[in-house]
Length: 447
Image 1 (cartoon, rainbow, N blue to C red):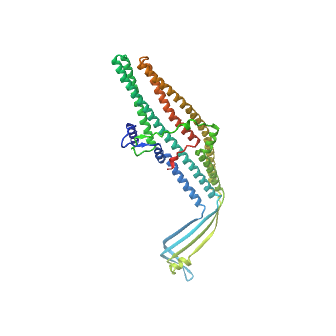
Image 2: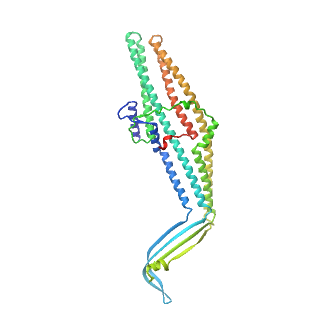
Image 3: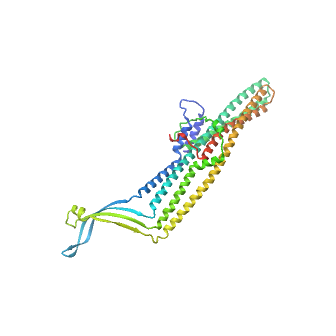
């Protein structure tokens, strides 16, 4: 599997940005759809939900009477006793017999065990439903972050490629200047060294893209390796850049929206009902029963229908009371265990509430930071671009030296890289903020 994923990444980058007849682009929507279908944790949680729903269904039907039917056909061999002329006579023989019965049993009272079990399983289902929602948010966050990382790598690769090509042209231009005697040979050597450095940066940029796309392919559990490019959705940053956040409001949003907190709350409710279920072991159990039985034996001279449907029909009904007196402290042990589970659920819920506050605060601070960084990076890139253009003109006119021009070019490329990274970091932190608040959604997830 790892080899397949690596091969996918290599093939993808080798044809990146190359148009062709069989060019197949992996869009963000398609990546999200595939990822949500194949996400291992999400599939496991959905299976647990199905299991909990089955337990809930059982709890509902467990409130009804139990009905069963039994039938036996057998042969008795050995001494069988019969009454002959007011005497009991033993006859060694074999006799074929048929016996059947239908019975029903209904629990009238068992310490509310069944009703509490129903409520417990109901809360477990609700808890698991919210867990599935949170695992969906986990998948959306992870897939989005991985996709954004690949987009950023692709943008940085394009910058590195454009810069290499531009400096390659500059190198050819300097060579012509050296031949014409307008520049010293040392400029040609220095520019060649700079070109080799940029070539190394280009190779590293390609490798980063290969690795991150391989990670995305594994994350999506891709079995179809026909994709050879990824699409930039060109998200509009304007709304994100002007978004204003209030920390207190965010705490309230997270408290009401975080599905993992809701799951924890319902798990705590389920544990409370679990304590009541275990306490029901202290109480007596009162049940009502009814049994209808009949039989047939060859030893009786009467025909089958007469025996089975008339003579041997037997009705039994009544009440059954079971009083637990001593069962090795079983009920006491179960109550102690259930109380510990409840205490653990409370501890987990309280810890999660504190964790959510920390996550919201961290996401809030990081988002505000990248909002400011984006504007700064944009201004730095604009200034560095003008400085590089100015130094390039001065060098071509013989006013400045190659070192100043090279430094200006490096600063411009660094600023361009920072600006490209700032864009994707802004998108990434927006995802992390929504994830911390519990409002992260993917509109196409249901398609």
